[in-house]
View 1: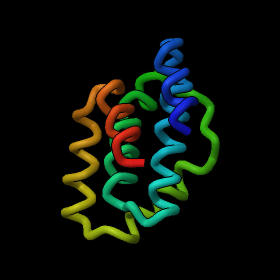
View 2: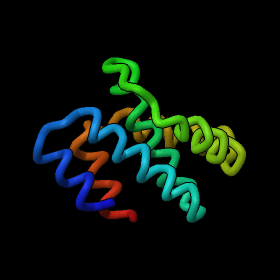
View 3: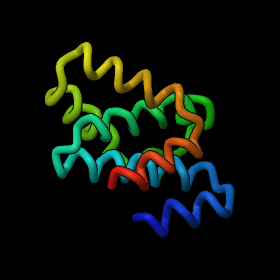
View 4: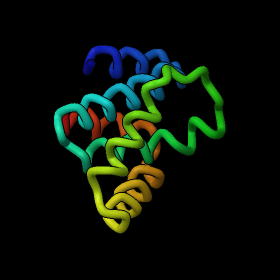
Amino acid sequence: MREGLQLARQLEFRWGELYGLDGAALLAARTGSWEVAATLLGATEGPCEANPAPQLGAREAGIAGVTAALDPASLSALWDKGRAMPLGQAIDYALQHL
């Protein structure tokens, strides 16, 4: 996971970064790291809207998982925290927390 995120960053491959961050969010969700998952999903929301890429289909499951696991106020705060992160900062956050 780390190598893929770092490679995408080095190549400045925007879709690769988004896929990598979504993958990291799904990994966080699968391991019960709901706060990390919510933050990373929030971080990719804006860029995904601005640069639509083909979706892998698992993003919605990750969103459903964090929505079910977190109370609405916590989810909103974490999502907003992620949305405020530039992609580079979100990648650093993912690498620190996974």
